[in-house]
Amino acid sequence: MKLGIAFLILAYGLSQFYRAFLAVLSPVLAEDIGAQPDDLAFASGIWFLTFAAMQIIVGACLDRFGPKLTTVLIFGFGAAGGALVFAQATTTTHITLAMAMIGIGCSPILMAGYYIFAKTYSAAMFATLAGVMLGLGSLGNLASAAPMAWAVTTFGWRETMLGLAALTALIAIILLFVVKNPVTAPSTERGSVLDLLKMPQLWPLYILVFINYAPAAGLRGLWAGPYLQDVYSADVATIGTITLVMGGAMILGNFACGRLEQAFQTRKWVIVGGTGASMIALWLMVVWPMAGLVQSTILLSVIGFGGSFFPLLVAHGKSFMPAHLTGRGITLINLFGIGGVGVAQFATAPLHRYGQEIATSPSTPYALIFALFGITTLCGLIAYLRVQDRLD
Image (tube, rainbow, N blue to C red; front, side, top):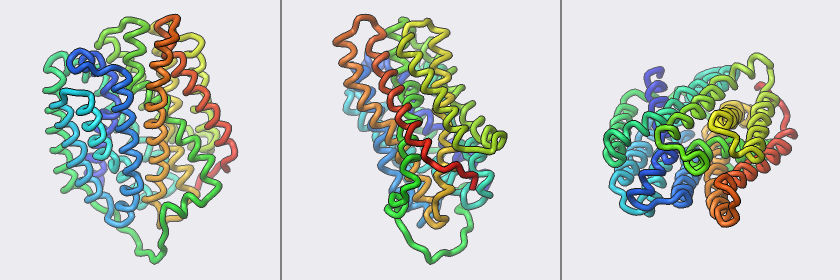
């Protein structure tokens, strides 16, 4: 079981990589195939939306077939195939198709690990284990920054993507042999995702989940690159370094949230604190968008840290859900979380275009994006305050 978890974490590292690497590739894709920030925002949004849409299917498959076949088949064909298509891309349409395939392929990995944790370990350990998997897997987020910039500069972006396609296929094959389905007691209870949607106590949590991760993922995965390039004339190496720092803050948030829950004996108020810090940093970016590279890096890191408490949100939601709907329940939360990022990517692309039209400085389009994220985060926090604090 431990070896299977280790390789699921490795696969999840690739999932984190694939959701964030466009920020570093934006300059070379613009030069080679004419891909503009709006085009990449659309492709990134497609990744998140296909990933989110797959969660209903993934949840049903986890509850029915277990994590082994669910992960091997979807990850192997979707993610590896998508990376191969990306390597051959000559138009932005090809990039969008590749990102859709990769999004589908990456959709079961984290939830397979969470399903094993939920069925194998105590409820009190879930948030900590979930945070560790998310944190270790998020090293892939770091790899999509400076290391990706180095690989692209050294080998070329097409060659780098071919290597990633081969690595993804290899990991999928290994998962077939090392992942084991957890032993679960047979149950005669039946249900569907509709039963979960009928639980009114969960809807305020869904609202925050929909909003919480979008600023960190949207900025780290896409907008940080164009922002740093347009406002500070940053090159690929500088963008890679700053996004590496932001990615590190996101990993720290993944590891810290479980520890903070245990230290303060509360889930709700740890989540409120992290999300509130992210919201404050967003508003500082609105009023201070050209503060300087160091100040902007710090604020981006705070946004990343505060937006990385997803394991606690999953644990909080799971505490309200019946055991026989574990797979569907955790994937439904993931649907809202990843779906929110996808919707945000689509919303920020036209906002960026509008900002360019009315721009009084290079920072104008990005100040509008920061403001949108600041408003939505405030709304999510207000809704979440209605949720009962529970530690299982």
